[in-house]
Length: 224
Image (cartoon, rainbow, N blue to C red; front, top):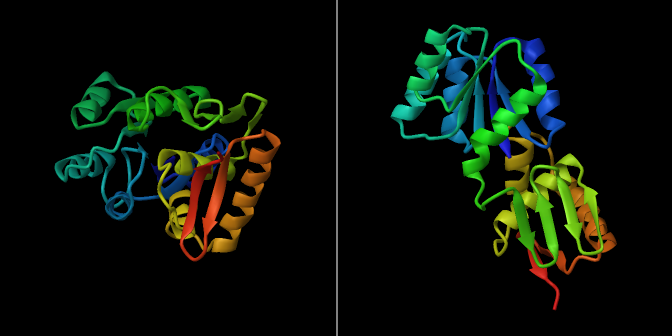
């Protein structure tokens, strides 16, 4: 799941990025409102964390512009403005939630889960294929013979494959979604993580495999 973090305090961006990536989110960070609009035009995000006091273009203006364009991406306002009037204005301008600074990391993560829940293509927090179950809340992959908590990138790759169970996903799509548009990651890095996932699937005795189609991409297949 990819989030856009819009915050001009760089030390906070660094801390938030570490928290979010440690909880299996991919994060693009921008530091002003105009840059945020450009990223939202170029990329489909699962959620936005938006400060209000930004250089270039303030957060409320960013929010109003994306809503005017029909972009319904979930938006969590994260700001030092904690007055009731500020919260009402933010929510009335199209935000899905509002969290004042300072905040607890656990609450931030809970609010992100809540606002992005409707974005998940299946009910609840479980994705299934064959005898595999991926728990989106605990990041655990399980089969009848065992379970394991997946590393960050492996989790995100498998989530993408499970959400498009019959699709062929090119390596470039994994890179763009998980590592970001500005990443210099190459296709062989995706292969390394796919290889790791295959070992995990074998260890769990999964009846689902990841098939590579030469020069095209990867997809899931159930074993007979």
